[in-house]
Amino acid sequence: MSKFQLGIVIGLALAFAGIVGGFGGFFLALALGALGGVLGSHFGGEIDLRRAFDSVNNRGRG
Image 1 (cartoon, rainbow, N blue to C red):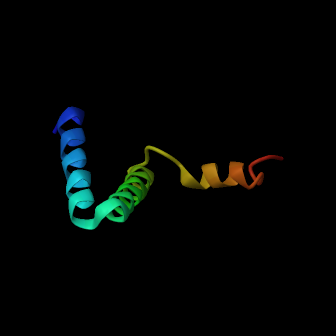
Image 2 (cartoon, rainbow, N blue to C red):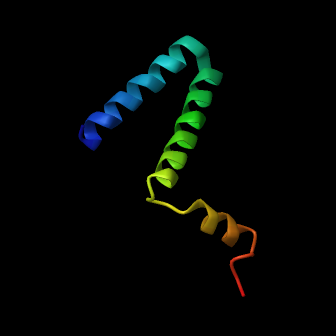
């Protein structure tokens, strides 16, 4: 599946969430989708959340 097709599927899913759940349902679907994307990227090895959290907490220095 190309990124274009994936974007269409995600857009349709968010539109459906907005229709069914209203404004709150749309933002809940958006937040959970973003969380799923970040966790999927972490477990897929594309991003390192530990390093990101360490830099936010200033534990990555020194």
